[in-house]
Image 1: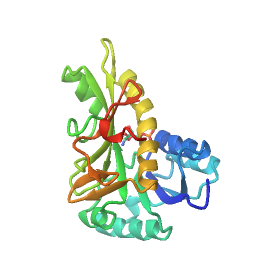
Image 2: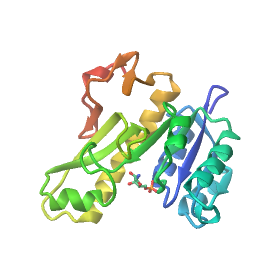
Image 3: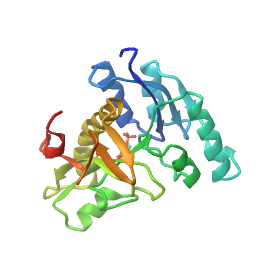
Image 4: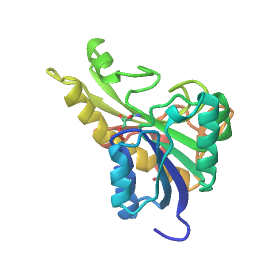
Length: 227
Ligand code: GRF
């Protein structure tokens, strides 16, 4: 971590394994960023333990304490902004955010979703991919826009669906890849290489024709050859 480290806030609701991957990438100096705070809407999210273990400030803001979505989102925005992050990272944050909230962080908020978007927006993605008989599945990092899981995709990682897979084996295979593509995307952002313009992702000032793709652990997209 250096003085140039990009300040960010990470929002979680659960286990926080993606948070852990980000913490590890910072510790290994493959990610030049600093987590100013981890915010959870659930007091017992295990990710809060991970943050404390890493010496990161933790905050809990429980939505049940607010009359409606708008007042919760306003309080959450104020809390996030008090840390002056350059980037807001949603890492398993299980809340649907208001348009106002999303608009406030447009172009500076990322999410990770366990499917090859635009396939399988929403919940239970692994089960839905298996039930649909798909042979491939994966995860996507995208800019957050008003449409749930609908923002422009930056990087995807593809994994096979093998005979005999159940949701657990498949989820584990996908999660392993999530832990690769999230720190990578954040580093691109920290390096000033990523931008959201006119609802498109720009990497190194070039609009991405399609998301960068990691397959068999390798970046396959020509647009990102120079990394
Ligand atoms: C991941 O599958 C992520 O794609 C989704 O929520 C899950 C969070 O897992 N958005 P974890 O809390 O990071 O372990």
